[in-house]
Length: 102
Image 1 (cartoon, rainbow, N blue to C red):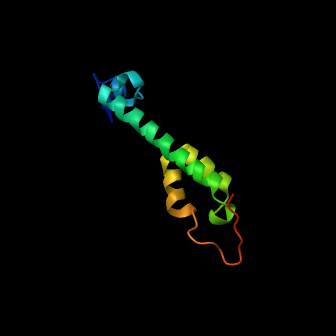
Image 2: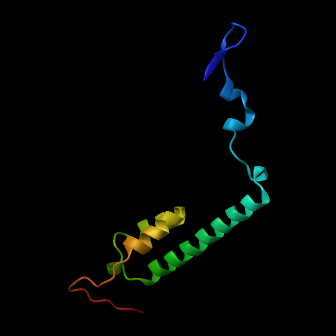
Image 3: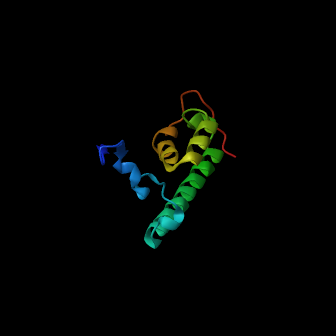
C-alpha cells in the first residue's frame, strides 16, 4: 500500500505504524493473556508427560511407527500428543505377536 506524499517518493503507510509488524512480547500481554499462555504451557506439559509415560510403558508392537518419532513430535507441541493418542496407539495385538508386560 503505497502513497505519494508531496509528489516525492512513495511511502509505505503500513510500515510507518510501529505496532503493525512488531512481534508481541510478554510485557505487551494483558494479565489475562499471560494467565492463558501459562495455562496452555502447563496443559501441554501435562499431556506430553502422559504421552511419554504411555510410550515408555507400551511395547513397540502396540505403537504405530517408531517410538522415538512419537516422543519428538509429542515434545514439540500438543498436536503431536493428540495425534499419538488418536492414531499412534494400536488397540489390538498384531496376529502372531507375543507381548510381555513387565
